[in-house]
Image (spheres, rainbow, N blue to C red):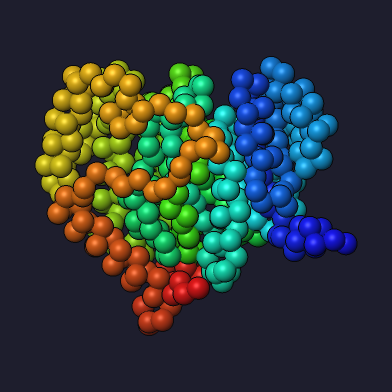
Length: 381
């Protein structure tokens, strides 16, 4: 065995799970971005979720050139069930999820494994930031810039740090322990936010790490799942409702703010969908919460003003000149807009909530959540 073989065998295996439904337009580019990772100890599992196009044939052709790629085909059951099939078929120490139309920077997995390997098992996952890309792989916007590490359940419930289904690498045994992805959302016709549900169940029990670099190209285009604004809004509202109900030890302030912030997101989505009825119903619900009513009014005014402004030529979302998402992109962290005093105060309160929840086991306080034992340990490396 030469040095290169010894290095390869020393790397823990990472299972890449790619759910794919009628993904022929992008699956080759997605697989190429997974196969070109600088971290080579990979198995790449494409779960063909009942596609009616030539997705399966394309994957089989590519697999002939890379033995790490294999295809698993199932009837169409939705993205959550497809990811669970991939987890069950995997054998890696870590699992990384990649949607069939997204892209990874070549260093993504290497940086995530290095970050998680130095931490104790109570740290279950690591996420990265992302760019928004179009159908031609061009960067058209920035994902969120807020980051948090450690026990972040209350903060993630409010701010949704991870932002997409292609940003997370998780310990495989933990993914199985928490039950994988919940397919009941798709069965109810509100699929699309199962990744957030999975992340919140993870964050409620374990600590999370972050690599604060934009290493994912998250694709948005007409017709993909995230463009169904009404379904995404209804799905996320249900995710937050279930998460709050499952964690009765969460202080009322954190729960109410999470619901209100999600209602604000839903209002924006319903406006994009042109659904006047749901927009009015959601706005009325927000107005019942005086804590967030004023900020909602301000945001609505800014939204109307933004829609009336034409973007500058050569700019995407008023922020970026278009460029390809590939290995040439400089992926330094990009700061978000300056926070207001009230948002900083809100974040401090939620950080204190997380600190209090993470230390419950060290006190004599009762614990309502049966799986809270791990979550309440201090998150030291």
